[in-house]
Every structure is written in structure tokens, then in C-alpha cells.
Amino acid sequence: MRELRQFVEVASRHSISAAAKHLNISQPALSRAIQKLEDSYGAPLFIRNGAGVALSPYGSALYSRAVRILPALDEAREEIEQLQGRAKAAIRIASGDLWGLAILPEVTREFALTHPHVVVQVEIADEGTRLEGLRNGVYDLVFGTFSDRYTPLVKVEFRPLVRQATFIYCDQNHPLRQRRLVSIEELLAHRWISPGYEDDAGPGMLGRMSRDFAARVDTMMNALLLLRQSPFLMSASSGFQSLFRTFGIEALPIEDAGHADDSGVIYPPRSLERSAVRDYLQLARKTVSKLQLPTIE
Picture 1 (cartoon, helix red, strand yellow):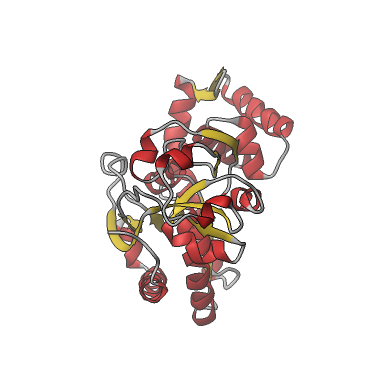
Picture 2: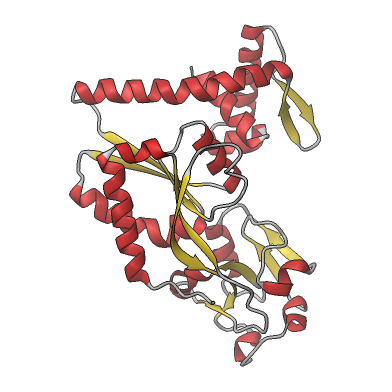
């Protein structure tokens, strides 16, 4: 069963090294586990390429069934342990950076105080992982922006909870902080940090222009620490403004601020059949109503 879970992780991330990092095991150990699984089925499950790995026809056949079997087995084990009094009920949540770092910690803390028999599992994940998790029944709730990518693949509902825009951030002592309004040309004259987003992430016209990236990192916290006391700039959600300020990072006033988008909760209808999930969602709505996240209209 462990090898099957590892196989699904590699398939979802299209990379043995990325999967090994997420699973907190060495890459050689994961490669051996995949080889063992391939030997047991007598067929290659992956096709190796320059960008990583892709599922072979044999791997696709296994993957389509594994992603249905594993969540069902987890739910069965959970229910048995709950009936035996050996385990708590669980809510599985995935989110983007804004929700995972700036909003959900307070929600989860409040929820834990009133629901001692429920454990909340929160994973900060990219949109592809969140979509795959919803499709395969891994997550009860997903927090973030909603895109058309969800609609053809999985039946879900979306509740907007906040409005967010994209701000440009820099160290509090950055020279551009002295400007009343920063032009696109001035922004493009500086180097940038990417917190794991696409290179075109940015407000307004800036999102359509090529920028000089000094570093690309895989988490927002890595990017935030790199941005401190540096001459670099970074695009990120307007909702981070209060959190970033505690690290000495400020938003710049810019000429073309772009537009705001809805962000909220995405979930399969069956999730709300559980009272704990409904309670968590109600608390999330209450929390965001108090936060008054900065945005633009």
C-alpha cells in the first residue's frame, strides 16, 4: 500500500525528486519503491523524459484506479478507528498561499478549541494539486481562486468569500518606497522574486511584460525571507499585506493596479453532509468578514 501511495504522489507531481521531497524520503529510496511496484506488475509505469516523468499506458491504468481506492481505504480505516474510539474525525483541506498563511491559521485555531475530537489537516498546494485532490476525493474543502479548469473534471461548488488583487511588494527600506506612485518602467528596471507562481503573475499590464527574475523559489515563506533587506520586488496577493508587514515588507503604490478577483471555498457537495465540515466553513466565513483584507475595485 505504501508503494501505491508513493506511485500516486510521483504521478501527481510528474517528478520523482519533487515527490520525494514532499514525502520526506530520499530520491533513491523512492526510485527503488517505484521499481519494486513496476516489477510487481511486470510493466513500466512511467516514461522518463527531460522534464521529469509521465505515466505510461500501464501507469495510467493503475493511476485511475489507485486514486479512487486509496481515499476510500483511508475513509474506511478512519471510520473503523473512530468506532473503536482510537482516532479522531478528520477534515482534509488544501489551499493556496493566501488562505494557508494569512487566513486559515486563525480559523483552524478557533475550530480546534471548540472541536477537540476533530483533527484538521491543512496542505498548502498549487492549483493542479488542489484540482487533482478534489477530483480524487482527497480534500473536503479547497480554499483559493476558482478557475474554469475545475468545471470539466469534477462536480464542485464555489462560494466566494473575499476579493483579492495582486500587489507589488518590496523591503520597507527599498528606494521605490519613497515614490508616491511607481511606474511600470521603474518596476521593470528592478529584479524580481517568484514565489512559485507563473512568470506572468502581476497586476494589470505588468502581467504581460517580461521581467528579470533573480530567484524562483517553491514556497511563499522562502520568497518572503529572500525579499527581506533585498533590492528585489515580488508579486503576491493583496491579502498578504498585514502578514508581510510583520516581516518588514510593504506594498508599493503602482500606476496600473489591475483588477480584483473572487477567492473562496471549493468543495464537492457531499462534503457538507458532515457537520464538522459545515462548522469549519461557517467559521471561515465569520473570520474573513472580520479581516477586512485590502483589495482594489
